[in-house]
Image (cartoon, rainbow, N blue to C red; front, side, top):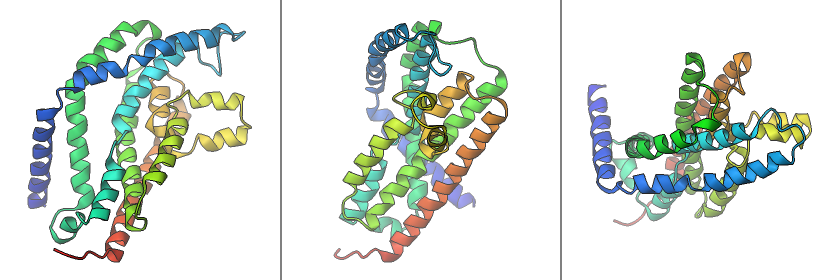
Length: 275
């Protein structure tokens, strides 16, 4: 156990050092990602100006703008750019063999690399995040209670693990399919919509039958953006909050086992030739 912990710490430390060298662009890049919020403010101001009650499914204009900013925080935790495609590429090009013959677990290695990536990202991007949220502070309600903040943090951490293992599972399909780019395109399309990154998923109750909207509210993608934002804004409280956290934990565990199963099953069917 001590030897394994030492190995994992060494991998994490090396990954941190690598990312600290070339991630100086995070500050400017992160700040630029917030520029579209200006158009969002104009857009939702026009939308709510046409709403007779000034609210849509319990959201005011300020709520929606705050929600949009919070989804950026959630997506910064849960998004895994290049993970699935990277796994599929390693399988296709034969690099996966090194994990099959060396005492390094593929999923553990990739998870540590992603943890290092997120740590460096938030260390460097804290300034731009703080600046934008300070400038947009008037759109946010008063600070929530401590239990609500803890639930928000828990949802972000589980969102990170859920996003990682979900995309790792998709990447493992490379053991069965030569190319997974088309599958990834479809996944990203559904992800953008059903994660709530486009608009709060509560809005669906005004356009879809309740049974269909309820179905959308139990699928795993909502926990990548919508759920953490809804928790902070107090849209999910009490028993509903506990149910949401339990469901998120359930989906996280499901994809942890799914990714592990897909990896082991892929190892058994993989054939590598040459030097």
